[in-house]
Length: 372
Ligand SMILES: CSC[C@H]1O[C@H](OP(=O)(O)O)[C@H](O)[C@@H]1O
Image (tube, rainbow, N blue to C red; front, side):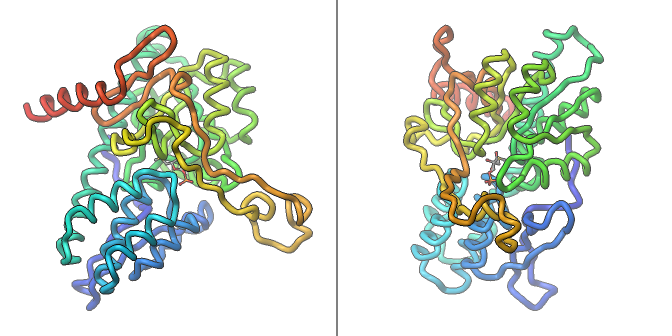
């Protein structure tokens, strides 16, 4: 799989022929699927606002965009600490944002042009990582599918996906949707069941749009239908992304993921988390220590920000709107698909090695493989 999409979540535009020092172009995902509109950002506060307002979203994408925001802040002559703090505060759950900013700050590089080159390198590396996640995930899922349905079976493979994890959520290629795209290239008889993903509707607005761009058959449902689809035997596997994976494998992902994982276990449907290794936060022991972003009541009550008569509930209704939930490791029955291989999670009857140990072995194996 090496398709390069005609659209992007973000891109740095060099200023050489524009008589400017360059700017960050981001796709305003709030306007999809009906409008493809890019915003040109030249200041770090604009980047922080774009992340907080979900102009650009998706754990890997906000990590990269925050890194470009850090470069813009230094180019503006702002204090590195002030820029770092402002960008870190934009969204707290996805570890990719913190990870990217920590990497840049650790360079103690005052020259914004040299920092820009580092960020370009990080983004290019992430694209390669996503290709390997797609390959590893498709290989693992096809092996499971051939075993279950008979090698070379032409039976339709039904994949349930929650939220959006495609090119729109990354530097390109996606994570869980990248696995699905790679699967579709190898097993054409595939249908994706897309959870609409209330309240911001990343599934309905973004995943349906990306799957349409890619020519992959799909069907949209409200989130509450996911358990019913599994009860009807219409889901063969579930694939999701991740915003932060704790050292025990507990995974923070878009709210509604946990519901799918519980139902998947009950219906014996393999549940895969697909994420780059830098989404694994070994410094956070369990899901209990992951800070879950609480978003505004407006997103639930009045997502179209229309007049009171269009609100979804009475105006004074109190709202609980966590942006993510936590899936415990024992429910991630397919494992964590990464660029270095599949990480298996401990269950009561399978005391798999710790994630740290598996990562070390897989990375050693991967390094050896790529070194050949
Ligand atoms: C490639 S993983 C993207 C990850 O981020 C999404 O959250 P949001 O749209 O709020 O940024 C969701 O949790 C996805 O799984």
